[in-house]
Length: 383
Image (cartoon, rainbow, N blue to C red; front, side):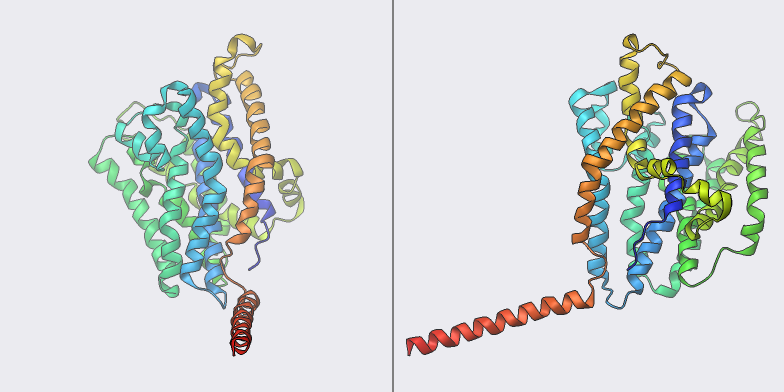
């Protein structure tokens, strides 16, 4: 299997995590639709990359579902678990922002359910874990579908998942008041993950991005911006629910189109910009940046008396200080912690090469033959 990195997709990771940092460090009132858009971009990327990887494994001549599943889960644990649980251990030892009471939920990757059931963002220190929980829940279920379902049915299943997620969005306005559950429960994010997966499924059968998507995504992006910048009106107004639905649904096609373009490689000036080393470096450490940034913000706020810039409120000071600290820690984490551990992935290939299997069989056969010869020699000696 060819597992070369998609360089320009790293640039998209950098864009996504920058949008999140802007929303949490710089945006007025500590909120911005750009942060949510960054998370949605992460979801489309994850759906595309994971599905493409699994389909490549499935299409290999020596594919076996059991070993492929074991390798997938092992590789995900190697990549995700060490820094994630290191953060939880730090929070437990320091009881930062009194977060201990919810740690069991976060350790089980149920952060989204914790916040949804309480309809509250406390403890805020770990509130970004909701999206990591969504990803992990996706990783648990989706490989079973891609590797075990009939190959010809996977595209239909993917479309069904997207439709179910969209139906879920229409369910809430009819039956419930606005609540965190409408954004945090798994169905609310399956449309973005499913769009990325559908892109990979179509690519695997030789189909590109539909013509209407290639031509129509700029218009949808423009309408999205107009809706976001429109006046939301008073609470419980007739425009509130349609506006929320449009803000959630309109970016899906533009995000999928952008991921598709970068996965095949942009040319010209845009391609050169997408391959700038600083952008690629930020994309490479984006998981650590996303994971650590609220923790470092909390420490920066505690250290405010010794910091000349204002980090206690949203603004340039917070963005500069907390952002720089986040980049430094994420870079060290990648170089000293995450990257060395990622080397263990080589022990968990998705598909065992036939040559390696034959060599293993030869070693086993030669070992058996050698043991038999040794037994014969011992028998002759005894005689």
